[in-house]
Length: 321
Image (cartoon, rainbow, N blue to C red):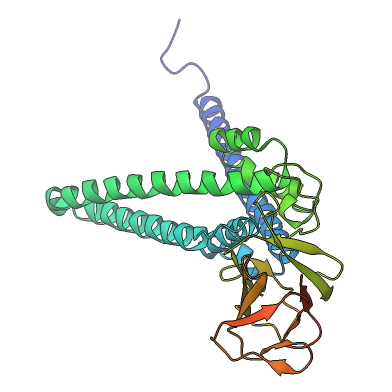
């Protein structure tokens, strides 16, 4: 009455095949969506870094598109933010070194795993090496993440009144960082003259490129021509301000379009007891005062209040007051 041959084996087989095909399709869709999301976050992060770098007249904004090297650009943006408050930092080198170290450790772990699976006989010899490199990778990744969050906080603080909230978002979901960067990259940061009150003093001040009015000051430097024309900022007794195009060397950042201005052009030190300024030229195109008189390179020269300085040419002039 009931035989073992009852039923439709081909129907059961087709049902199994259909289920497998569905799972494969779901898996492919998931992978494609994941890849699309990763590409989107990378592109948005790259665009944001490039725009932020261009805001600060950095010539290496293209680094935002290059893996690993983009960490250097992120650090350079933070260093620029810090330099405008007269703090010298080296996030660009620290982030780059951390990224390179983590990448090398990851490659070694991957290659070691491949060797273990390809030759099980050597597994016992390689397992110790794998363990060491896994520890190193974990340490590098942890330190890198801490430094990155510190750098991100500095950037968020320069663009937003709620940097802590943004950092928390980055901690719990690192993929959110590129979107946050992108959303703020079109805004003017506090360190460059916006009215976001994120620093100790208002960022909307006469000296938009260095938030130094909080320091007790007596000397005064006024811009006559160039990007600082009409602006003035103060300098305290014994303080030394460096002018130039490179935020790695200078406190007062001059536009990269000023070809006659060197990366580290000159420095000005105020001496309150004599109400004079000691100016030192480091440039190749020269620093001139009161017309065509040129300072001797690398030799501090005392100049009185009222002296007009020209950096390279008359495109960027300042009056010592």
